[in-house]
Length: 77
Image (tube, rainbow, N blue to C red; front, side, top):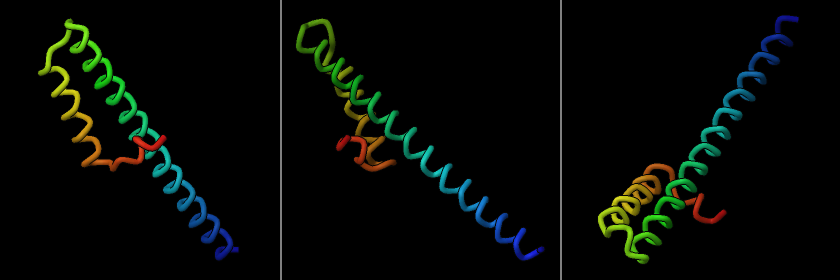
């Protein structure tokens, strides 16, 4: 009985770890999508004359930092 409980505990722990990894992935993708949206808005505002090149550059740097940290998978979705 103890062996069964140990295996069940290991499986539960593995499931929790996999779930946390997936949650972290989803959160990183959402954050990346938000950064892309901000970049697009900054670029649009700049082109329309109500934004600045500095705001666009800052938004681009934020996207690049996110890619460096989390990869570029969010760009393919």
